[in-house]
Length: 91
Image (cartoon, rainbow, N blue to C red; front, side):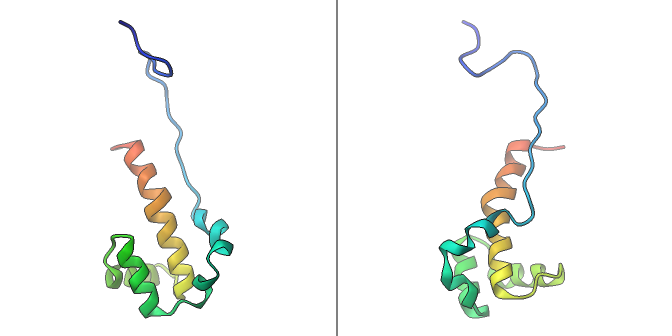
């Protein structure tokens, strides 16, 4: 039996990518995010499954310093960029 619908036996190049601020579009749906402090940010990051202290330090070293911006970037990274990396596979 041959390949099913939507599959191919011929390799096809895949272009995959994300934007740096992908989740910023959804900030308006979470008005409390604009008022985040480090403590509330840490609680939210923990719910994403990342180590809050390490994540906050890493984002601040990269130049993202205020808690709302860190939250937006962390959501982009965990919900969009990291899944894209898994789909893309090893280089």
